[in-house]
Length: 314
Length: 251
Ligand SMILES: [Fe+2]
Ligand SMILES: [Fe+2]
Ligand SMILES: [Fe+2]
Image 1 (cartoon, chains in turn brown, green):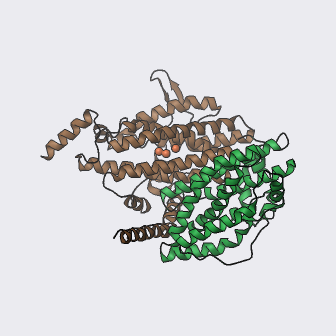
Image 2: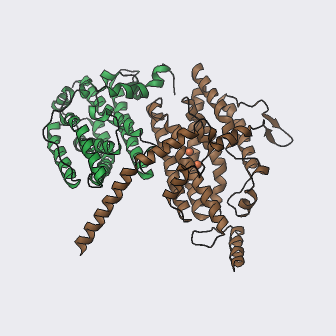
Image 3: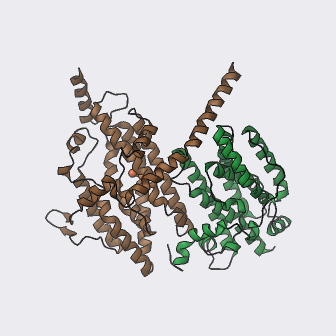
């Protein structure tokens, strides 16, 4: 019996028919998606913090408005994604709990600090850029609610990327201090961005199953190569350089070769030893705890209202 | 017509909107619920947008090399004309909500009349902003009621917020010199007509929120004339940092 369901399920996936929340799905598929989507949602929310760090210091009114709108967009992405995950039978509070207790992960990139205004440019260009590379294929995820959420998210992410690029372009055309600021930010954000695609394919055990289920369309290394190829070209327009002496066009492969990734750093940050892991999590927990009385009051008030209405109706 | 006065009047409107927008933006990423994080950021964005409209107009009224950014980023504390209320620290969510409610109530009645200003630019900005402020007022009223009539703790916190903020409300409807002149020159709003409406709205919402309206109390003032609390200096130090640290740079 189970076998039949599984065949029907895989048959749908193979035919690119979306799986919807009420459809039968393998338990492992459900769990993998909950992990994937909630991790993505958490990344959006935690990702608000490094950039939020510069809202009050944005250099002019236009940039201030754009940055605030951007960080607000990320909150919106978090919202769509939590909702998509909820269709799989987990609540938002449960997901928050997993985040706060460290059980759930979020993208390691947000464990790096934003030191200068140029970091806002570098994050937009590189981090949103890498996110788009990861997320565009997810618009075709076999799971309907996730795919639909990603369509909305991707549209906004491409705005973010252009805005980030434009910040860096302005800086690179500015004063020497601004150019230095821009180059320094690119130097710091480049490798962590390259790492955003996750471990090498041969160390990514879930890839095969995820590809079969079409919740992953390309391997980590494929996406990473695409990202490097694009950035290696775009950085020329910026008049900046990427901090990789081994970065070189390879006519034989039609791709850029690039240097070795420091996987040690990658795993340390995943384990919690990045420069801001603790601060990010503490900040999220504080916001949640400080907000407890507000949420309690809101539900107490809603309850009172309901009772009043019931009395009136009777 | 006194052009300097129109400029001061416009700057005062701009500064109010910018500083409360800036304060609200401090919540972005730290709100008590994701939906409300988005809501307060939205209000911040609206306010900053209104400020930009007023500053751009003020720049037109000023000497050649003045821009919205030079007005926001290169004036000093004593040149800012915002009310004290908007520069106060956010406090907890209840205090931020109450400040927004007081301020939106004021802005609502102000813009309602300013859209009939004899000055076409001010009228147009007010008309557009009124739509936004109508929402801010509804949102903040609902939250005042929800928190006032929520739990024991939320009520206590709201009462505390009322204590903290009340003495800064008088200035909203107390005219500064340039506001009086603006009325006599025909483009400004007569605050004495707003005062009763403001009190009426606050009374109604407080009643529903089961909060007690404070009696007559000493009211702080001075912000509109450039005499601020100690908080504004820090707001500006943070906000203006890049413009001050890299003079003349383009961003
Ligand atoms: Fe996002
Ligand atoms: Fe994202
Ligand atoms: Fe983004």
